Image (cartoon, rainbow, N blue to C red):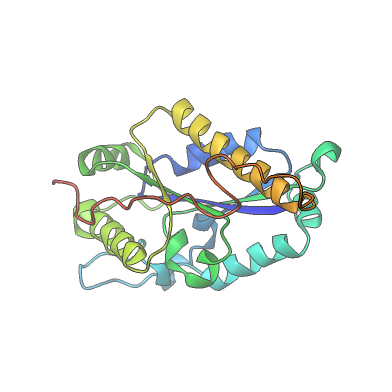
Length: 232
């Protein structure tokens, strides 16, 4: 059984923290970070807004990221060994890949591979404050957040919703532990349901047992948040 789980959403929303916690908790689990596929700095264009376009899809080598995901799909065991992840014998038939990044759901060939998609959100003021406390290899120039980062976040989020991409929205204002427990339980339920679906069908004389919430390996229907920017 293979499960690809996306941890996407707004910048500084808690994606990496949540991903790291899940990576430690889940057996036979590997991770791919979208940030590792940025093109060289001299290939990042300057946009009409006057800023380097770090927060647009074209600044990422998404074909290379897709190839890496395909390598995991072709042999999760080999991929795990190559990345220092030990395969646990008691769960050798189950393999999980976490994809973490802010534009995971804007590249259709990758979108279609996800088993679960999570999307972290936080309000404008909180996001701006968190961003100001981070130290980046390439420091943010003055005005970047309001002039580029936040507008691009809403542009891609609205496109995602308009394209009908199903995600489970997560409130990034919750505690790290609460978010971790919520997502871990959801993933574990998904794995359980997938395992049940792989069992032989019951004999006709036996009534089918109703399944719990989160049927199957697909997505829990999530009511999209209103596609309006948080108040600035």
